[in-house]
Amino acid sequence: MNLLFLGDVVGDMGCDILEKKMYSLKQKYKIDLVVVNGENSATGNGLTRYSYQRLVSVGADVITTGNHCFKRKEALPLYDENDTLLRPANFPKGVPGHGYTTLDLGYCQIAVVNLMGTTYMEPLDNPFFCIDSVLDEIDARNIMVDIHSEATSEKKAMGFYLDGRVTAVIGTHTHVQTADEMILPKGTAYITDAGMTGPELSVLGVKSELAIEKIKYHAPVKFEESENPCFINGVVIDFDENSGKANKIIRIIER
Ligand code: FE2
Image (cartoon, rainbow, N blue to C red; front, side, top):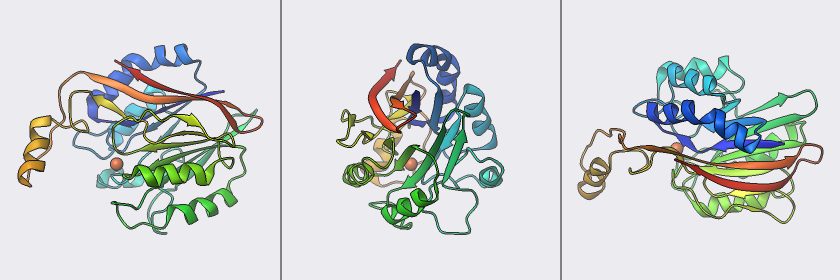
C-alpha cells in the first residue's frame, strides 16, 4: 500500500496547489491513503472550519496538527466532531479531541498518531512515555506517527525509539524538508521533516521581508503569507499492510 504524507500546508495558497495537483499525485504514486499536517492551513496560521473542509475536499483522509492546533477558537469543536482530525496525543487530559485515530479499510486497519516534541516547544507530556501508552491502546498493525517537533535530535531519537514498533515516523513543524529519508533497521520508514506545502520563496510560508524584520529587530511584526508560487513537500511510504513494515520511502517535491 502507498500512503502519501504531506508536510505542513500553509494557508489558502497551500490548499490551492493541493486542489490542482492532488489528483495527479495520487495517480502518479498509486496512493491509497493521504495524511496531511494542517495546522497552518488557515490564512494567518492555525486551522479553521473552512481550511479543514478544504483539506478534506482535496482528499486528506487524516489531518494532523501540532502547536497551532488550538490557535483558532472556532476550530475547537472540530476536534471533537471529527475522528480524523488529530491534535498531539501528549496534550494534557481534558483538552478537546484525540491524539490518534484508526481507519478500518476492511482488508486492514491503519492508525495515525500525532505527537508533539518538547525540546524548544511547549512543555507537554513527555512524547516518549505518551507513545508507549498510545501503542498499548492501538490494535492495528499499520501505524503512522507524525512527530511535530523543532529539534531534529528529538525526532531522530523518536524514529529509533519506534523502529520496528510502527510503520512510519514522519517529522513535521520546521517547514524545511530534510534529505534523510530512510528505512530504519527494523522496518520503520523515517524522515526528520516532510517539509511544507506552501510558498517556496518564503520563510516558513511568511513573506521573507517580514521574517527578516522580526528576527533582525525583535519587532512586533504581523506575519503575512508570501504570494510566491507554492510547492508540495511530502513523502510516499510504500508498506506491507500484512506485516506493518515499510518497504520504501520516497521524498517528493512537486512544483
Ligand atoms: Fe508547528
